[in-house]
Image (cartoon, rainbow, N blue to C red; front, side, top):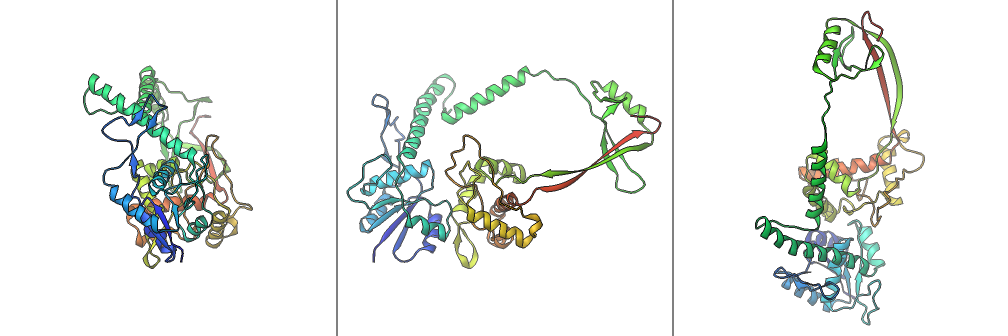
Length: 413
């Protein structure tokens, strides 16, 4: 029976994939990168086209040895790190160490074709088996993109940090990301210093009629003119003029307002919503999302990948996922909440659209059904993702907006 080796970067991901495959497959984890630039020197040849020099990361020698041993005994090797630049670089380094010659896009075909690249946008049985049926190549464009970023990090960080140590104090670091962040902070500080504050006041009143509840109102106009209150004196005068007077309703206007559903999450929107609604830091959000993607223990089902890949700038979803969401909406809420055709959202112009939007791997697996198997943070993030995805395929919300114009008794406006 042919033997195949699948290499991923995460032990949790390895456990989830192992559950879906038969005895002919062995799944191993590289536990992240296996090679990197050396820590003791620059590691980049500035005189020869910025060529990087890679070394095995400390503590990874035994991991590599185990992988190479299994690879030698395998008929086929499938490299399955995450489907992004970092994952592509991991796959490339692994292919070099295994000594199989991978066929990368833009490279020559190898004589001994046993190393393949496979991509999992979601860790489900169907997605894993589909990827293994159509293995691809290592994308050298992505590898080179990762190398360029890593080399730039090293050149700026390694040399720039030494300058900071000499000029300011030891221990400070400079890098590609820190430099841009510092520029943004400086630009915002200049705006703050250039800002000239202008005093303004607003006046609100709580009014109550014969029938509860009371409601809050805001001053809109004075003598038919838009209310612009520039001083405390003027605000106090207006309050004194109306204090103690009864208000009468001058006009009531009711109208419908439609609020369209928002697109499924991309990475930045997920981080923003998790910070606003759950008080999660970006790092915490991405750590939890990575774990939901790689697989969580769901009772008798064992490890299950609950969401699709969480690093994406695309709002695109598959036809299969959209139809599943429509089935859930129809079953739970009825046809009145279902648009005639599926909702499709435009991407930003700069979006690379390499992956789908962040969504649950199955819309039928609602948050309540997995709550008992997840801790509080994983549950809250999964619920946020599930709600956003299902809502994205619903009809617009219809709101009734009521405007009530009230004036002090004895006045016209």
